[in-house]
Length: 283
Image (cartoon, rainbow, N blue to C red; front, side, top):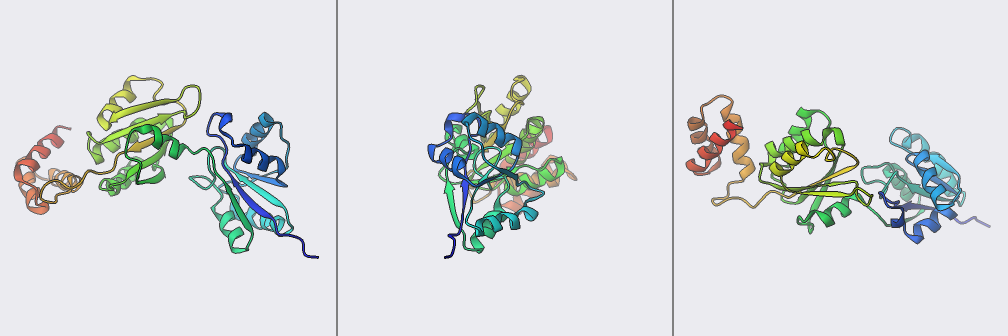
């Protein structure tokens, strides 16, 4: 008699408030033959709070490739493997992609148990358009790489969601303001679902100022939401395109000459280009 093949259960865990764990997720963790965890210490704390004791194996960024064959063998033996990350839904800026892909290719059943996610929680409370959005994970740690990526994203029309660390949030906001424009709307969600949950909303200029004034701003876990690029200005000129063109020309030319050439290159009016050039030079 052939033993039934096992199942891989992708289980969302709370991002802060333990009460957000679903009953279905709790039952799955309690019944799993083994739990593959991003950080076994964090998962042990969660299981202890739930009164659950199950075998754990680590599965994180640097060992996932080596761990997958072992877990596939357990699935082939009919076991149920629960996959969890430190918080929220696995695979979303967390490990698990290789395991899910390999399990699917091997024909194992994959069940996703939905639940808390910092991405959707932040979007729901940001007060920014959420019908269309894209998640970009963590911004690069190095300033030059971060600004280069933001320059590419400056014309993205969808709402953007990032994760950021407390010690880099001020620099990230300053770079966003420089690349996207100080008046772009944004929100910073801090410590979601926890006792000190905070939302900061306003323009990027507002948030840059708040980050300097509020000592709690750079504490805890942070999700950053930024409105998408506005529709092109009259004449079909993308604001971000005009800004990049002006910035490049200002490196070599005075504002009046930079504005004249930027207007020719982008189709913007000379007055609009000159106003931007003088403002950018002042910045």
